[in-house]
Image (tube, rainbow, N blue to C red; front, side, top):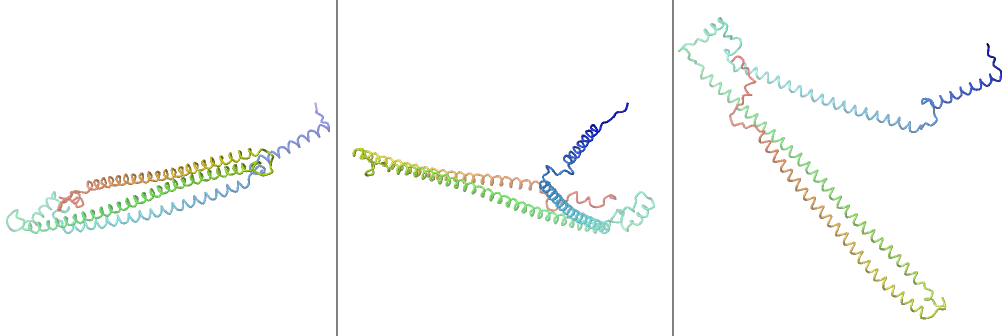
Length: 341
C-alpha cells in the first residue's frame, strides 16, 4: 500500500532536514580543530610556534657544536694515530738496522743446522787455522758486547731521566692546579663569610632603626596626649565659672603627670639605649663567632690538604721504579729478534 505524503508533512520533513543539516554544518564548523576559530587563543598559538622555532634553532646549534667537537676529536685522533705509526716505523727501522749491524751471520735463519749440506759448508767455512775450538775473534766480540751493553745502559739511563723529569713536571702541574683550586675555594668562603657578616650588621642596624622609629612614634603620641591635656577649660580665663580651688588642683595634677611622663621618657630612653647596646653586642658576638668558624674551617682545609699531599707523595714514591744504576730490565730485550738463538 502506497504512503501518501501531504504537503504539510513534506514541508515539516524538509524543515527538519534543513535544521539537521544546519546543525551538522555548525558542529563541523565549531568542533573541527583545523578550521574553527572560536575559542582559540591565536596569540598563545603564535607564541608556541615561536618557542618551537627557538627550540629547533637551539637544537641545531647544539648539533653543530657537537659535530664540530667530534670533528676536532677525530682530527686529534688521526694525528695521534699518524704519530704512533711514524714511531712504530722508526722503531722498526732502528731494529732492522741493529740486526743488520750487530748480528753475526751464524745467528741468521738461512743457516739451518738441520741441513747437512749447509752445516758442512758452514763448518768448512768456520774452520780456522790454529787449535781446534779456538776463537780468534773472541776479543772483538767481547768488545762489541761491551759497547752494546754500554749503549743499552746509556739509553736506559736517558729514558729513566726523561721519565723522572716528566713525573716532576706532572707533579708540579698537579700542585699548581690544586693550589689554584684551594685558593679559589678560600676566596669563595671568605666572600660568603663577609656577606654573612654584612647581613648580620645590616639586620642589626635595621632593628635599631625600627626600634627608634617605634620609640619616636610613641613619644609623639604621648606629646599629643599631653597637648590635649593642656586644653583644660579651667586653665583659660573666662572659660567657666567654677571654683578657684579646682583649677589649682588640676594644674597640680597636670604638673605631676608631666613629672611622671618625664621619668617614664627617661626610663624608655635608657631602655632604648640598653637595647641598642645589646643589639650591637649581639652583632659583634655573631661576627666574632663567624670569624672563629672561618678560621677553624681554614685550619681543617689546610690539614686535609696536607694529608692529601702526603698520601699523594707516598703513592708517587711507591709507584716510582726502584732501578739502580746499570740495571737492565728483561722487557728491554723483548724488542730484539731472539727466535734463532
